[in-house]
Image (cartoon, rainbow, N blue to C red; front, side):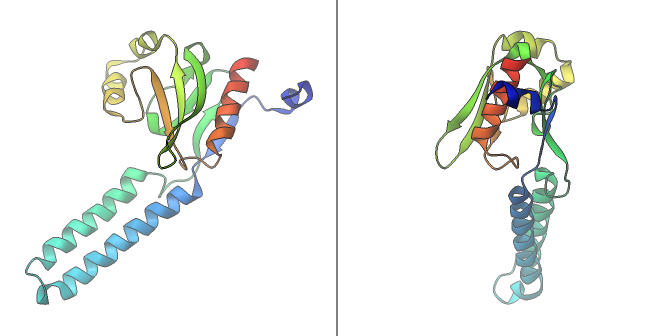
Length: 172
């Protein structure tokens, strides 16, 4: 990035939720709903548990829409600014730059991730309130010494996000 490019870069980079993530959640929920309706109306001739299958499928469809959250909501999923990084699915406050060591693509071809390594992670997690610490321990995207973002969670490619994070960290 040249000096001219750095002047053009805004103070805050806002990244939205991936359109394909919302679409996939809606497709899977729709398919589960169709299976549930078919099982309810036509399942009794083939199995005695048509109503149970319908209930399970419809509950899974509702859970899929709810848990993905991005299927029903649009807007900001990640913010990179002068204070640090905030990602909606972490459930954390803004992670300050002093705790961010590096960001880079990680994982395999099947499960590509954006990995954000933390420095002095113990101090960062200790600064959180008890409720946030408990939620962080249960969150699969939050590890002991790093934070991750799954591929296709955001509308920007992982390599570009890693570059933007490194540039913002270096320019702060």
